[in-house]
Length: 205
Image (cartoon, rainbow, N blue to C red; front, side):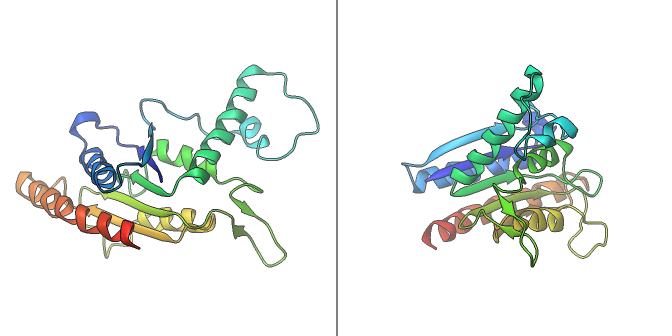
């Protein structure tokens, strides 16, 4: 089993999402000692955002790319998509920033949604090619957004992953993280207690 562990919080050691993703991965490995873990810190090793030359690498090119930087980015795109395809479980730290995901995580998503590799176009619409994966998303938010119209974070992640065929998406959620020490501690305690039952359920399924 391969686990792909992604962190996108800019808060480093003070990050609630990083604490929770680490706990999830630790519990997964404890229950499945033979698991391999591929880790990417999307802040410390930021992926350059998609642009025209990078996006051109998602399809066969009628010419040889002579620019070394562009060739390197095309190789990076393939590596990221291949790593996703090879993984069985994804653990994604996704704090909410300004009602959506971190731009670092968005950059990763833009690289792995590739026509012909993770989805394909058909006469009836696009079809995802990456199925059979299980995902745990750690969603940390400063306020409470479960019933708010300003949440463009969790719905976006489910849509993006679903587009490439990943439907088994689970959330460990810690809300109200900016509403004082008591609220933060309570949210973290609840989230941490939810980790082991979810991990156990994922591995049993």
